Length: 210
Ligand code: T5A
Picture (cartoon, rainbow, N blue to C red):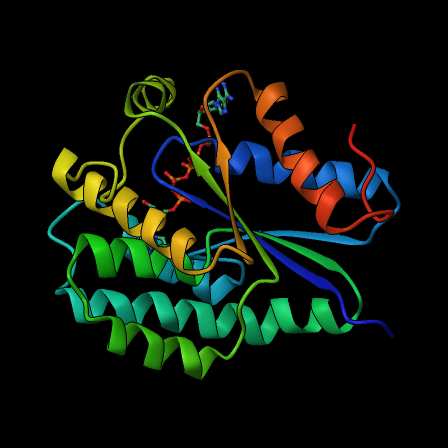
């Protein structure tokens, strides 16, 4: 069976990734593709338990421990869900993946790139395409205000989130073939149309926007 496609959505808090991940998965399904929509941290029962531990408000973990917990959840997710789906020829749409660890634990918390890349190497899987959703801070704050409560990362200060955003930009500059920056300001339909353009250009014939 043909190998599937692995696409991730990344970005800071309130960029609208989850909304666009759902819309992209639905558009691909309408176009006749077999699609798996999943997320990190999470995606398996065990990884969802780690997600709850990672996101609960409070002091959290030292950066290295936090990094290893994210990669532990990822190892579980990749082995049990993502690789089997790709082997079955599915399109896997994943809301966050290793670039989030690079940006949050690397850029935000100061974990060395060598450590992150050693752990990423153990996972041994990178997306074929990453959509980096970039919303201006005011727009992101407005979207976050619509939701009840804050997880531990959302509660971190503006400097932390500025370092995360800068790290995402640096990742995109270093891997322009894989990571495509998408303007995430504006209405949902407008952002979905920008994503559709990227997909249509990259995967001609497999994707019909709608
Ligand atoms: N993390 C994660 C790490 O530190 N390291 C890692 O390795 C990984 C994998 C959890 C946290 O974990 C951290 C990063 C995160 O802080 P998460 O659950 O994906 O990850 O956390 P969030 O980024 O907070 O994801 P959310 O799903 O909560 O937010 P999104 O995806 O940015 O936004 P979304 O789509 O849920 O939208 C938020 C609100 O805005 C509205 C939506 O309807 C919703 O109400 N909205 C729009 N409104 C107007 N116009 C648009 N275009 C809109 N798009 C969405």
